[in-house]
Image (cartoon, rainbow, N blue to C red; front, side, top):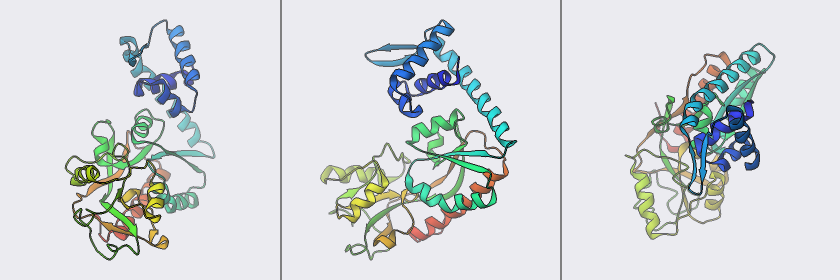
Length: 305
């Protein structure tokens, strides 16, 4: 069996989908199917039941999943040791949005200056796929809010508190307010990421208020934060986003970022399985924490602790 075959098996097992596994691994569906078939032939077992209702693991597949994940993790650990003894080593992490990468850019600059031999490997993807990559050791950690740790089995390290904010043009009639409520937003069209892209705490009323608002308005739900900003600039409505998905320096684009009154602050930081004590990783995470604290205070006029 090969590493690619094991990676295909673990990915299909996680997603119960050959198509999603193919997207995650940048293979074609035919390639993933070929690798799974070759693995089943070699092991002389059936790993998946495929029918018109979807894909499910067999009992043999469930048993083998634990071993396959352990084999892959052992291989990644061995590669990490080799990299640590060489000139270059990787720092692998994931973010769910381009805005987060832009926020972390100063930390990347500091990392390059302090540890020029470290090469960042950054994955931007949906939360569920980032969690899978972290769980199975394909990346060292991911930036996320605390509630993402509940069903993942991962550990969470809090960096700061975040809240939900409105983004609107600087010349909008509401732009002069220090805080906005949903009463203020009642007559506006709202633009927000689809909620499955931003899982929220069940006790955060913003989620329910967005759902109620969308029943009576033509609200928009793009998949990309930059699209939301562009649509706000074009006058399609007011953006509603968590702080960590709002880029800095929006004021230079004549946009205002204003906190929403009904919001409940939520912890934001990193999810990880076993966070190594590597000096370069500790340095980067400390730099990222300082930047995120500053970003929250600047954007919404609050000091986070």
